[in-house]
Image (cartoon, rainbow, N blue to C red):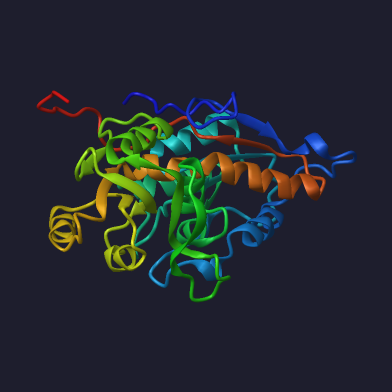
Amino acid sequence: MEAANTDLSDGSAGGKNTESTAAGGAETPSGPPTLGMILLAVEELWPESLAEEWDEVGLVAGHPSAPVSRILFAVDPTLEVIEEAVEWGAGLLITHHPLLLKGVTSVAATTAKGRAVHRLIESGTGLLTVHTNGDSAVGGVSDVLADALGLQNVAPLTQAAAGLPEEGIGRVGDLEEVLTLGDFAARVFGILPAVAGGVRVSGDRDGLVRRVAVCGGAGDSLFGEVRASNADVYLTADLRHHPASEAREAAVNDRPYLIDVSHFASEWLWLPAAAEALGNVLTDQGHDVQIRVSTTNSDPWDFILTPGGD
């Protein structure tokens, strides 16, 4: 699979192999923190109380007393990502998606998930999941997406039950200036990592948009909130045929238009911001930690065939 464009060396979204040393601003670093200390920092940024009831977040593997000098951020805890973490010497892998979302009765190495658990434990690599708590928190997945698109006056599509007014799933805001749907879709395409699926758009290419709703990851459960927000266009991932078709049938004045993107790509944008945020917290505490964003493209699709044309 071709690697996603994940290079952040120029400070912008896209590229590969970025690394930051959290100790840069500390005068007397106390050395690498323990995994338990990092868990406290993560809880400060992305409280587990913000996770949806169905979700499984938190520590999956690792001993709280283990020292951690390197942390790798990734979207998915795939075997390829785990190998990347092990080869780099990461003491902790932080992924957005859970490895064990559903209950299991065995972690034998005869299955992919079992092999993942064995590799993590045998290599001494911890695994931490920051999923819907990372979606909902201030500076979370949809906040980063909204910021990358230049949205203003941003608010949650649905407020978190146990959070601040500005926390919750999805975001809605306004562009600084009106764009055509085609130009806005081009902006979306330009900020996301390159993946096989590209960007799919439903609506009039010349239609005008200003109010934008976004939800990183799968967001077809939020159509009611999107309509209530009076958004001109809704950007999310994994739009299935029937929910998308019904949303278009229920559209008022052809709105909201729909933009469907890669699940992986929509959430990858959060990783550099999350890595920087955690690095800042650990720096303030005087810890010496290296933090890197994975270069592995875990989007499941390799290529796509299209009819071609404009």
